[in-house]
Image 1: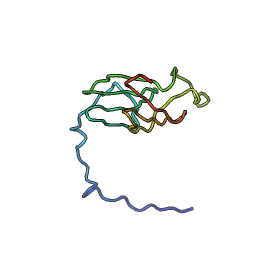
Image 2: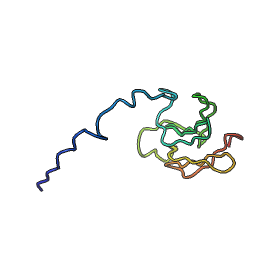
Image 3: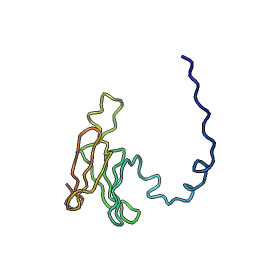
Image 4: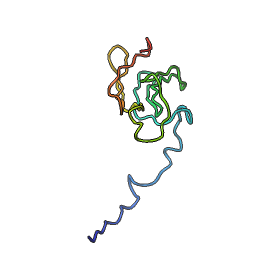
Length: 116
């Protein structure tokens, strides 16, 4: 098969390189890893991170954290996936709860007010 790709577009107009991300304000830089989705409620941000925690951020600081599963351990390979927990999608639920879709275990309702 002889395949030829077109020349890439020139980096002009909306594709012009810029430094816009050099001026962003980091939240919890180097303190959390792998946030996939966020919920913003006023000054509060909720996100799930790679180690299975769902965290509540207020004023740029972690105020509270919860795990979707009772224990989270480090495993060596794909054969251990059933033991993992990875919150991916999040939405605001009723009564201030957060609905979390986990890659391995389904959908959870998290309530930071009563810790459940």
